[in-house]
Amino acid sequence: MTMKIDESKNMPTVFVIFGATGDLMKKKIAPALFNLYKKGRLPKLFKVVGVSRSILSDDDFRKRVGEILKSHGSKEDEVFRSFLEVFLFKSGQFDNEENYKNIAKYLLDIDVSWGVCSNKLFYLSVPPVHYEMILKNLSSSGLTLPCSQQGGWTRILVEKPFGKDAKTAIVLDNLLGTLFREEQIYRIDHYLAKEMLQNILTFRFSNNLFEDSWHKDFIEKIEIRLLEKIGVEERGEFYDGIGALRDVGQNHLLQMLALVAMDNPSSFDAVSIRSKRFDVLEKLKMPSVEEIKNYSYRAQYEGYKNIKGVKLKSETETYFKILAYLDTPRFKDVPVVLESGKRMREQVKEIVITFKHQTPCLCPPGIHYKNKIIFSVEPQERISIRFWSKKPGLDMEMEERELDFLYRRDGERTQYVEEYEKLLLDCILGDQTLFVSTDEVQAMWKFTDAILDVWYNDIVPLKFYNPDTDEARESSGYIEEYISSDNL
Image (cartoon, rainbow, N blue to C red; front, top):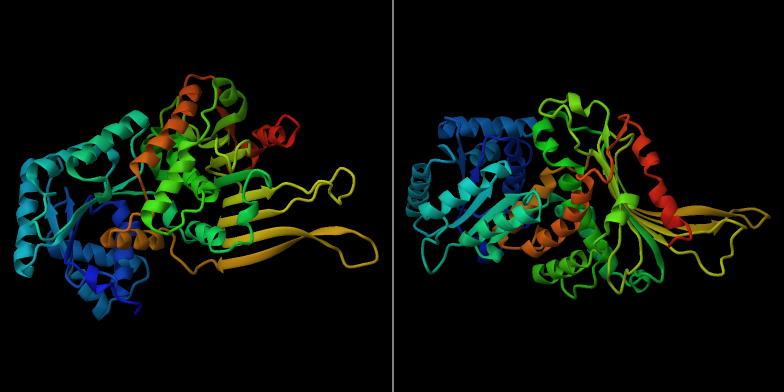
């Protein structure tokens, strides 16, 4: 067992999950909660109330959760069985206001049985199309009102995408704002909870080795890429209305950029870190139509249109590459390459910082030795520093060497479960550091909207590539060629 939850924060809590029989519960929420339970990190008085249209009893729901945990490798023992007892279930349609009144009464009964006013955490584990309906019914039923003036907070967890563009994001935020203050709203981008991304801040600001050279005078370019071997598979209908840029570019890639480009927050608290992330995102330079036309690329893998739920004439991109810039004193004129794609030849998720070569450079004619720092999320979690050294021998020959910090080996973590374990605990504890603020959401949409508007006016034509190859990357290579030339 690890360190127990801080007793000062050990408030009785009820966790209400809308969409409790969906994929998110199976893949992430249930196993993450079980890990927290085994580590003693959940409040002593804790209940999970699943809400779904399915007709299930409490025992049916517990059995379903048990099967989920077994599929993740858990054994049925005393701890396993005691954990299942925290689960309760309420059937009902999301559009039925009476159902919400019944849930409110149900939660009141739990408080009465405990003899306290408990904290309430509402999780919208549903497609975004249901958000408005659920939020309005939460409001009209009084479910989100504190049960006393002395104690009992209410918070809400929502999954990305946070809207489909800046306009719809504002609509969603306005809805959330009718029920909650910003400090009560927890917007999930699970990438922020990845250990390697959290490590970027420690690497930069807890060591003084590189920070003095972490700016435009020393850094030549920043590359951020999320390349996946998997395709769209069973997500056809959802993905076809989103596309790669909205799916991972507007959120994951830009949040990764914020972490490597932000100024020293002076503190690791949520307010400081989120403020510094926003300072970067707000300064994303808005590209002109001509810049988007010349220095962005979008493509779709062959066979994508055959996936169930995808339109026959779909113009949705499954790969993109974008050249971006930050209008900040620290990184002004430093090119940033943002790249992501599905059905790629290899799985690579990383941030590459390339440093400028020395002038004058003790290099062979036509060759420039450049140092790189690579933050790798997959296939392995590692930080690599690439530098140059003399080869052993009589001649003055140079070779690239690597100083490598392997954070963890493959198989030492369960993808997604670990991130959600951290996110759920932070939400219970009231720590918003790894959650996205409304200001960040608006800044990210402002940048991606500019690109999407040009793309979908067919100014940047959709290309095609063979799956499981580097074809798309090679076809978009002119962007790297441009930034390596004297055009900069």
